[in-house]
Image (tube, rainbow, N blue to C red; front, side, top):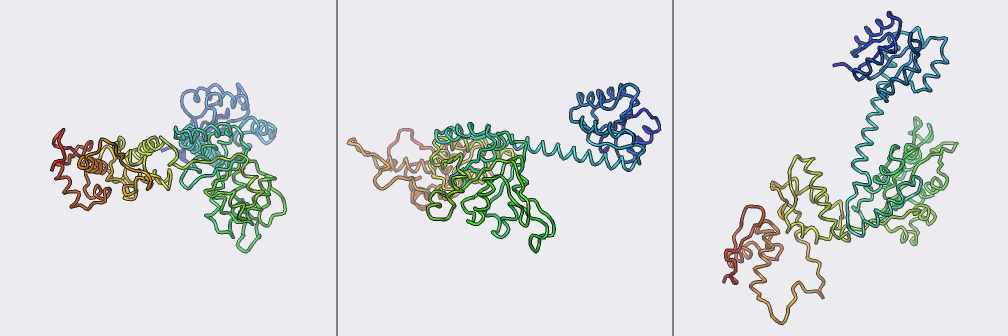
Length: 476
């Protein structure tokens, strides 16, 4: 299998033959052309991965052919070949977009090294472009999910912020509300999407290492500093720096961060000169920074410096109508990952998911759907696929509220009891133990009521409970 297709363009027959023989021995597929016309014909007929291009040709020169070749294949790497007396031509070629140049006379081995280097750089550039495109498709702002008024107000604010590539943003919200996802959406949906996205979790590093990781260090700055190291802030140049869990950063490091935010400059540990970077800063925390400032746990000046654009992400329990959208999104995601074809969830289960208070927010919902997708063998996820804590959660009624409203017409207790048993069995897809747990009954007690009301279990996955008499009474 050939490593790459190389086109050698040179009017000297011996050089063309020598380069072709050498590069073929190195595993490359090689085409050769003696002038610009033949070279353009080769480029029109098939894809080429690199051109070795002589500057002087019978019908054109290397600069003109380079421009014509790039019209046919825009990202085509070019290594220009010049004579020793034509260094100026080589400089012009580099300015015109050539990736490298080599002067005649040359050794074939030198050509081989340059070809490998240029091809590797091109491969890395394509991988980075492909990765960024994948990230954009996955985390782009248009992939944000929700229709509730609470989340739509957040989306409107973000849309206004997206074009502002320099505005510092502070995202606050409970754990699991998607602060990191929103930060990525802002990065990949904004003008800095082609730059790096550097995520720093402030609690993931020991205090003793955080400064060095953030700002880097010079060789000999401390005992183990055997070489110069760039910090994460420096690596984020041109892109976005995401500071997660900023509320847990120590006061000492807060002061260091404040200087950087004010000046967009810093010094490596042990360094003597300021380094300036161009980036957007997004910070996030699940803590109430305002209260933390009042208690002395967070610098007030840093707090105001961070909250240029404050965004508060609402908890999932307040996002009315968003749970079904998120559930379907996660089902589609895990269908792809697990090679399954789950269509959705049963209506009873969806009602339970919407009623649950989700203390872990979207992260907990995602994990719940992932677990259900792994365990389920049905086309629709059911109650038996849920963790017990979701099934066991009380309805959320307070002591001053009633689950049933009693009118002057009265109510049939037997009908109410039967209806509750039916609901419990449907919610759990006929699992008698789980249904009994929902009603505070043991297995024998729930089985007694199934017999009492002449209920039978169906296995079609749609309606697991059926009363034998369409219009019967209590069934005593």
